[in-house]
Length: 615
Image (cartoon, rainbow, N blue to C red; front, side):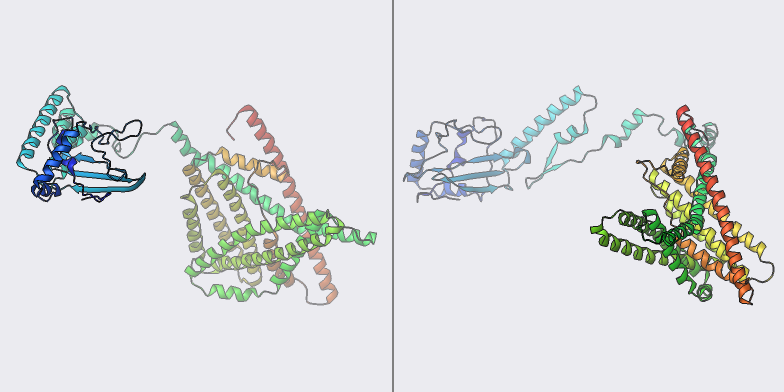
């Protein structure tokens, strides 16, 4: 390789200057026959040799290559060594010559790098490499001597240490190949050293070297027979077992039954309190004979009444018998699939309707306090939310009606379709819930969802009862009680198993369900702390539409056919009796819930003050 900065040919003289190394102990650089420097020496003219000898006489300063292989520059930035030459025509060219020798490779490796700088500009690096060259006999002998001395030094170090590290053993003896590459010798790991293992643990094979009889007697008298696959528990694990079996199911059932009656109370409020409030609103408007803007609660009750009336009217025009025969013609597997699909959509609609009714009540509050300049905007906002609420509630009502008809079909069928439906549906619920990670807030919401599900099952059983009253022949009441009991018992057992294992897998203590019950009691008394994240959100309009739709034919079937005045009088009588019954039930359940909520909150406060944790 040649560089011609000034038109003059330069040779690689640095490779022949062995005096540039201060350390004379370094081995000479081996060169192959294809080295361009060797060929230049053989074909060089006598005149050229004389010129080179003259240059050697003038070049008395020798640069020392440090251990890192980088040349040492003067502090002032000038170039004073023989390896940094100036060219003739005033043009300055700097050549950086680097020489690296890989003595560990066993073969000669020559790398030369030239950095060309012309007039202050850096033109990059010019490199020439000769890596895989063969070694001559002198280098082989020197390499053998070096390796022998290294092994001798290693033997002295091993004698001074008892257990040398494996990494040092591996790095001390590199093995070279003929092509110049270094291959590390694969030694045995310390953990795989059989002699060392036997020296450390002489009884390692004691169990295997015994006779079969001695081995069996050792197993008999060695301790617990399942000691290899089980471990001894502690008092905390024992308490967790009894929490899962006794304490948690009791608290979970108390919470679920309380949530169920809260849903019943809301359902009865929709059928008794809300119509009375709407009648009082219209009676006040007729009595005063002037229009006044209703309050937010009155607007909310009026919107709920409109949604309930529209849902009841649309469900009244639905042919239940057609839907019943369509579902009854399906197989048991299809009934299971249909029921699960409807249950999924039921939960989705329940969540969506809760959000929609919240937005509707917010719009009602905004309309009640809206200034006159924003009255039109607030009115359109309230009307749009009301329309969306109607659509969502009617869709939810149809889903619940189809689910009730599916359950009725399974109960009436004589091929154990109800049992197959309950088993498959409930165990699918366990599988989808138990083996997942839940936080405490998620379990809180899951308990509320199970309470709402129990109320929906009660509404479905009311529809089944109404269908049996209308169409059943012979003694049917005993069979209905048996099926209803089996449905509730399966639901209760599945909820207990699900929440017990959820608490076990997620580290939830039974005291958490007491805290959930305390939050539900506070919600019953309209005590809403700011830090509460989970509330029981239940919209009873869709179940009310279904119950009214399935009970209306039962009332119509017991009305006299003629004359018309008697028919009207019986309608009024049945309506009044129903309202009195529902109102009495509402008062009874409402007062009972408030009394229970007050008692339990006071009990929790006393328990927190006295640091008691047992219910």
